[in-house]
Length: 333
Image (cartoon, rainbow, N blue to C red):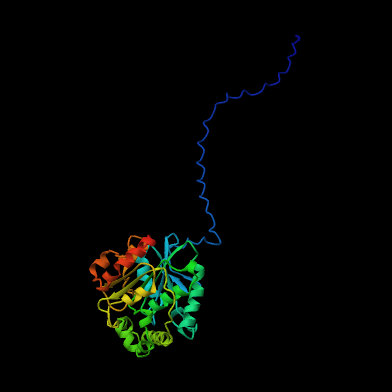
């Protein structure tokens, strides 16, 4: 037997692996959009600034129908018998920005219906003077405008104030001079007749409650007016202008020259279109004339569209010389 060559058993080698082939990576899915961040609303909303022209009450005694703190002059307005501060809302809006109107809020009517009216005219004058004085700082320009009962009150309050707090200008409308304001004139007036003569009856006649409120205010003011007594005293140094409505049924005459004796400052009187009340809740009143006076453009002979349409009374000429002299001493008027 022939020898055989032993064979070495072979260990099978590793199975050959196919070459690696790079596979394309699948496209990445787009990321979801980030949602917008929602902010929680503030727990306390921020209040919008209050417009400068929104009406506001100053203490108990004054309404600012159209506040203008930047105005060069404050015009304090005194309402007629039975009237309230709101009577001067159209005037306040029409005068802006030349002046800021501070309208007097008398007691026993409107928002002050529960406040008692002072017992007599002297007490009312003293109380108003006390309340108005802090708003008449020396060096700040101020003027008064009053009509009918308010004209007399404006004048007496100006006189009751300390000399350094008196207004530069007092404008009185629809009222006889203090020396001519008698007890009989006030006592003989009936509240209902006065409501008619002032032209306000039509504004309230549709509402019986408004009529009664208006009559109540008139009766209150007539009772106070009846206590007025004029006492001779040194005249004001403020400029003084007396106005009358050409169709005023309550003035015995449109000659208001009696007011001239109550000031050493500039004086003039003018007859303007209109009735007893020049400024009301539906009429602004003598806007052009007041604007002219308050801006310092007028003196003894103020000219404006309102004044041009009016007729100056004959006695104006007799006071022109005195007015011109006073104007030289007070150039702002």
